Image 1 (cartoon, rainbow, N blue to C red):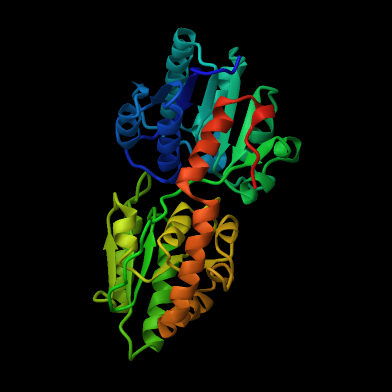
Image 2: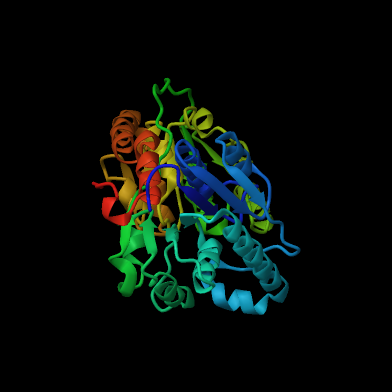
Length: 389
């Protein structure tokens, strides 16, 4: 069944505003399109459809009458029931996808994120018997409705599971945990890192949403500024507030103004070229309260930046404490500030740990290595999946 030139269908409802999941899927689409017939179904045109078309994939855009934004990943079932317009739109997407399956007869369907996982499960219920890949990118806590639903979603014998980190795998329901393979995302690794400009600059790059802790980072930076009166560190926060209320971004501007640090903090929109902005800074900061993986953290290490972060979930799998960066207790902005101060006062330590991080990311999270592994896992029989570290 699984030879060359298979037909692979990828499901991902978002396309316009890329996050870590969409960047990862774009890489996978490009890789699998080299040898296989690839289809993508999504609800909107955007970054993902553009990348897919460039790779030679066939894109099917199935716009929905109402946005699926109201369907929350933390409570999939309840949000579906309580948001009737979104439920109708989801059913419409299901019907369109089912008709497409009848037409293209895919050998494998890959679901990239939570809503796509729901869609794939329902396709199985409706009769799809082919290989199903559930790419799990979230941590669903035990006792939640989502955790229970995934114990049902993933039981099908044709379902195979890719977890983006050990933290994600370990959070899966016990009944399906052993089916999961951990395959890290692949990120760009700089070929050469230029000398950093002055003054010393800290940066966060990623989605600007509450669970990424940007407000906590500003709080920690303000404490650093209060202590480091003889130095003039800068902080850049760069990223889009996608699929979230834009009031959070305004909250950050108000916080900076309240602290009186407007001259030291810059808040930018989404950056299409992470490397070009990362290379201008000296230390990466992630105040995320929980990270299933932490793509931007791996990217920062791939640009030889040391990392300051809360010790949580997937971040601990990327950052080696005191080797490639400093990890502190979750939500402890005092400790976070002192870790930032360490690199500010000891630039040689920043260079040393940054170089160690570069070596680590080049070996474990290198796009040139990880993306082919992911593509192979999707397009081959489970018993022939690549051997991982």
